[in-house]
Length: 95
Image 1 (cartoon, helix red, strand yellow):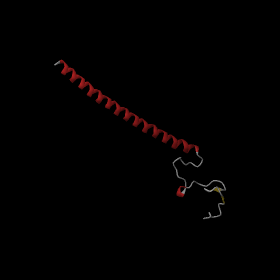
Image 2: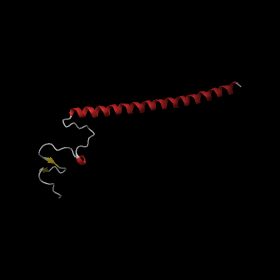
Image 3: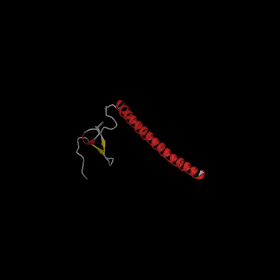
Image 4: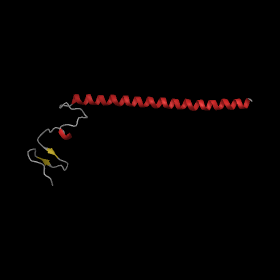
């Protein structure tokens, strides 16, 4: 009788430990997820407004520039992918 009672208590304790461990794991996972999302959103907002205030043209870090995603041209020369100097008045060559 006493042995069966001890086995029953041991099984109940094992099941309680498993349930408690799973609950702690779920709570820690939720805390980690929420804090990661909160920190990421704060950093994104800070980067957006911080970078916008430092730039001369007023664009934020996520702006794509002018039409077609091209940044606005500054200066007199533009260097293309092949590192050739291009003139603004001359149309690009199609080699």
